Amino acid sequence: ETGVTQTPRHLVMGMTNKKSLKCEQHLGHNAMYWYKQSAKKPLELMFVYNFKEQTENNSVPSRFSPECPNSSHLFLHLHTLQPEDSALYLCASRQRETGELFFGEGSRLTVL
Amino acid sequence: GQSLEQPSEVTAVEGAIVQINCTYQTSGFYGLSWYQQHDGGAPTFLSYNGLDGLEETGRFSSFLSRSDSYGYLLLQELQMKDSASYFCAALLLSGSARQLTFGSGTQLTVLP
Image 1 (cartoon, chains in turn yellow, blue):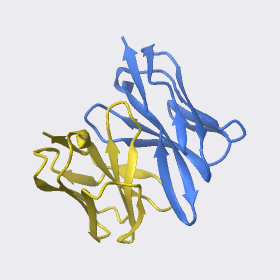
Image 2: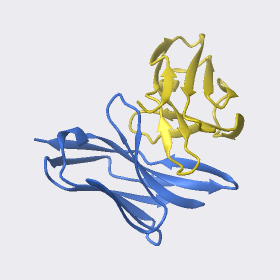
Image 3: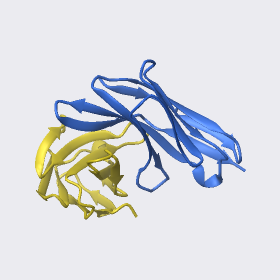
Image 4: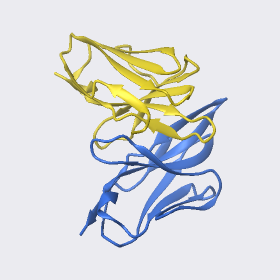
């Protein structure tokens, strides 16, 4: 239990669906991240939020849309995804003093 | 671009010592972290090297040499539960922002 909770844990969607991934942390961290993890590849940074402001968008396609309503919650809205978007999507929050990332267990996404 | 290289797989027996190397080519390098991820689980923080030298935490130690752009994770007295993926991650500074860039991960298999 890392203190970062992601829902849903598993999601199957068609290419025309719209769905959202949710991340929640009550660790008092002000920075939150979305990473994509595909098999045999490095974790890919997608988005960074600091104090609810987006500070990094790592050339992510617009079919992924993040939302950070407050420092404890982070969403990733998904629409018209492609099969190659199937992956594990990990949320993390960062402890400011040490730089340590606390990860959620991820949302396993399958796009049919 | 920013890249970190580490071996894809390592196998060792219980009680042995194993070293997982990581070389990096980055700009704005600030420090090197190591994370452990069991199958189906969240990556969890193991160690951080902000300075050259060895950091020891129980059975795990981590080393950094900035002049060689190289670090390693040393696992001693291996146990079956140490079977997992291990990621090195470079903490990079871009302006006032910090971000972690990950290697592809090393799958460690511990045999009885």
